[in-house]
Image 1 (tube, rainbow, N blue to C red):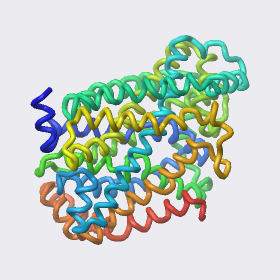
Image 2: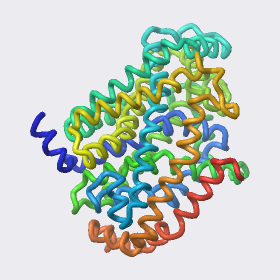
Image 3: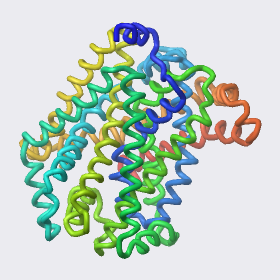
Length: 459
């Protein structure tokens, strides 16, 4: 342990390409895939929205994802130092610090929400979802749990404690090894749920809904939502990708390393939608039930289908694993900052960052119990933190990252660095140079502004 701590003070690295892929995929795969994506698909026309989402990944998600990894890889530094090095001024250092703060804020309220998911996993183990007969019954159970401050606070604590335990072990022994276990397990659980769903009655209706596009259902709002989802699902704008990129070797091929991560993230989103909607359609429920899908609709469904007890356990285990891998990545930029800039040992940085993330998350964990009357413009504390991060800080962080690469460092320099790390890829597909140059310079910054203004409700 002493030798690892000493080496990590210099600069931690991933032990293998597979370790990096699983770690970054773990960062990308989270509640946005398994919770948010299915209900967005349900509310925005099914397969037509999926097509919009895939196009959005190509237009904004993938290039910004690459840009942030490139910043970290080129500088081998935490986001604050990386932005300052590449931008050549302290002002850009502050921009990097902003992304670290964003990740820290996300880790605080994300842990509170993930704590509820962990709590529902325990409820599934207890068999609490075996006797729901109506939606009202499922909603009543949800409200009973959420109104209990001890329930929300305790699971927030247990969840963040799990994350701290993994982060404490280091980049290789904690983040890398942890994701090498959790990500394959996540896929196994997800595939079991998908196979079970496909064997259910009326599964064909869900596949038609998901894979037979009706382009008349596409609206300007759906386009903007798809752009936003492609942006948020990849952990962009939070300092995570810059930090993980800094743990890469200089000769690592960013294109061939990143593509499997984006494909895994997309694969999980689509499989999650199949797993959810095969259940929903088989019980003739509405596919557009919104955020309540995971806490209201599915628990009711699990109480009415054969093997529902085991399926509920698997489903909430799946979501808990996804939340765990994402929470770890949200905290890591803060930890890396204190190690690099202030010379802290990893153990101290992990414990301090974890403790204060827990404290900041306490009001979020209590937002639907003792603090439910505390609102600002009609928003609870949790909703405020979510809005601040999702609508303001994350788009700003992503915008600053691509602005740094595309305009300050220069799109030509960014593409040149990519070509040097992946000469064979660019030799085989020379159009990639023009794609990345255009996205770094114009495409991604403009589209991020659309996402930002839409999140603020200006469209």
